[in-house]
Image (cartoon, rainbow, N blue to C red):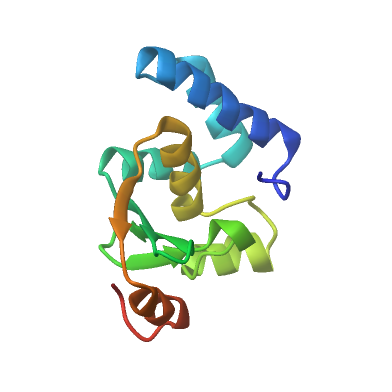
Amino acid sequence: MRSFLPAVAEQLFRDIQKTYQETSQIPDDLLIALKFVFGPCALQALDLVDQHSVTCVSSPSGRKAFQVVGGSGHLYTCFVSCHYCPCPAFAHTVLRRNEGLLCKHILAVYLCQAMGVTQQESVSDQQMSMLLSGTAAP
């Protein structure tokens, strides 16, 4: 599923999913593991999850993208399938400096998926095409 992430990150998301389904909480040991694996963006990503900032936008053709409202209020369209976010932190920290696995926006998407708390929005195929091309938001 997330073959581009290290096995430890994959297992961490599975553990969060299992525990959250059972208890509706993420225990301290998994929060510490998140901080260890993902660094400072872990806390920021959890804040985005708490604020319900992640929306999965899907179309009848099966296309899917995630929109995340960042801390500044800016809307980022993230593509988990190709591991991409257009935010400056992703470009600088992940792509240029290779200092992190993810930005807070993509991590928030993974956490929302693991916890089952992603907001859902359906759009037409035409709206999705416009979203994917960057010409308009749905």
